[in-house]
Image (cartoon, rainbow, N blue to C red):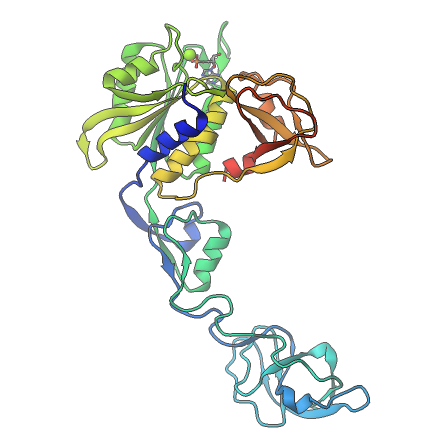
Amino acid sequence: MLSTADALATLLAAARRVDGAETVDTANALGRVLAADVVSPLDVPPMRTSAMDGYAVQAADLAQASDANGVTLPVSQRVPAGAAAEPLAAGTAARIFTGATVPPGADTIVMQEMVRLDDSRARFSQAPAEGEWITQQGADIRRDSVILAAGTRLTPQALGLAASVGCATLEVVRRVRVAVFFTGDELTMPGEPLRPGAIYNSNRFTLRALLARLDCDVTDLGIVPDRLDATRETLRRAARDHDLILTCGGVSVGEEDHVKPAVEAEGRISMWQIAMKPGKPLAFGAVRREASRLGEEAFFIGLPGNPVSSFCTFLLFVRPFILRLAGVETVKPRVYSMRADFTQKKGDRRNEFLRARVNDAGGLDVFGNQSSAVLTSTVWGDGLIDNPPDHAIQTGEIVRFIPFSELMR
Ligand code: AMP
Ligand code: MG
């Protein structure tokens, strides 16, 4: 069986950025991936600005100012934010406000709390440090510099940064097209009564929401019966117009598991079974299609049906794979070293991903029932402990913790 690291490496080695880019309004680009570098056409700020409400002066004029010997300067102009500034007349001060242009000739801002005003003359009782409270032109961004690189996934703050250099639109990679379907004759949709032997299709809700977070174009083909012909037909349909076919359930070894033989008939399986818990039956491969602009094959990833297994394998494998298809370079989650506040006497032969929660003492607790069928553990937890094969955990030991927040960005 493949290790999780080898399995992920195999998956990522196969992923190529999809073809096609589009121009979108910056305001609508949240979560999209930049297709090209964003280069700033200007300095930000574009001029020297005041960082305080106060007075713009030449520091040399106030070198002798003290509590005992205040220096008084006439106020020669008033510069609100958004207005042009005249050069500072020698031996005067300019009234100025936060964000306003510093008049040429002025080298320092004195905040208004330090100044007394008598009859439009400003009295200073301290010598300021030269350059104080002035934000230099280009202090944030230099003209012609790359402010956001191709392959960046746009966060709210990245949208703000692009807007700060005047970008009204952005070039982004087209959305990754994903077809998803669910196998299992026991599956019923919420809203319908449960027949004897049936369960609700919870994975449809988890996986659709995870795909939505990744900003995919999703076609949900619903529940497919546990039959080879039906599975093959759905795979063919899904391959036509999608980059990736994602399935859930039916990839184990039972007679009712038809997904793997169906993919083998319609394409190929290149990887199956990973030494991890939960999630061992994960499958990866491709499904043929008539050659189209999308190429001759659609990628295939088959997730196990157990709810915790499909959740964890999506986060650890499908997420980075989809991000790579979308052109994102950095797809590995940050891993934190944290203290285990519990003991696990015996390690598993497989790489375990334990649902764990950060406690008030800053350590980790684990959920009592780590069964792959117990979805409650995923809501209770804050993330996964990545525990190597055959490793028992002692209280106080430092373990690798991957927060869900890192896996769902
Ligand atoms: P399978 O991978 O098809 O062998 O399914 C493993 C277990 O997960 C079985 O107990 C299934 O009933 C359950 N299961 C499969 N698909 C889903 C689903 N979409 N939602 C909830 N449970 C599921
Ligand atoms: Mg099944």
